[in-house]
Image 1 (cartoon, rainbow, N blue to C red):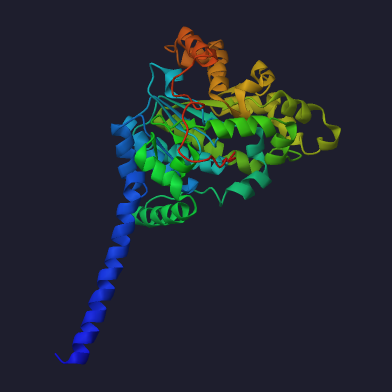
Image 2: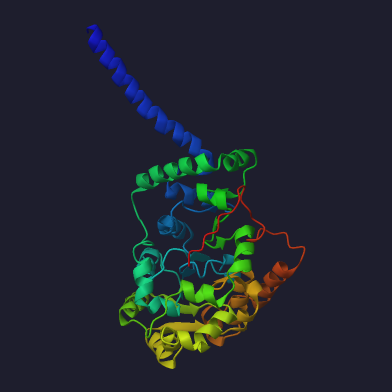
Length: 387
């Protein structure tokens, strides 16, 4: 080999070495933060350490992560929702095994798809579906059908993108991750560490104290609700069809379907009911609240509970913002559901006294358990307002 050939060989070898070293270094740098693990590995990690809280860097991967957890847990009761039911948690459903699939399905088509995937191998006894009036608008479907479509498979694509997200985030906020190495928290994943939020081992969402304080200060308004949720003159027939398919599949798989419309703040409900300037757009709300819609849901085999006009609406402490219930609010949702004979007949073993004790613990000033207001990340919170 002449000098020129040796030079070229050296350059090529150096290039290959550098090409391997850089990714390897990035992989190792991201590892302590859970940013260089596949979703399946992260699901296994949470199964072994249930105190951990994880959030994918991109919400389109929420479904893949949660499906891995469902396969591990094989729950008796499954909840499928957008972010609306995020604070429903396993202790509320004891002694039944419960998993929360919230933050995975924003449209009726996505709900039906997630239901099929989550119940395919080990059907739960009961599935709770968050069903809201705004799901039946074409504008809602157009806004969320693309940007929130979940990504499945391609674990190495997730891994590469997760490491890249870590590198970008670290460049902006290095001190957050340096502090984390000195004093790790239960949070894993770049965005979970940064924001102090994520999914518990039961799939429920823990909000940071900063998010709650910011939202309760600015977002407990009727404007927050109607500006976030599109209106329409009537319910879209096209948006109804996925629920029809889902109900048929539930019958085939022996799953009892519960539909729930969770509370909204009272000011928002009053706006939908009485604002004359908005009346054209609140037609979908009035139709959804009608007896005809109740009869339609019943004909599908869906037992529906509408808490949109609940007394829960009157206390802002029950909300993170105009349409997300706090942990206290979700406990009060369960407390009200347990007063309804139809609900008790479906899940008879839930103890109302246990629910009351959980409410008392949150209301107690000396509360010190790891609720959403107690868990906080090592960095300043950047609020997520994903409905």
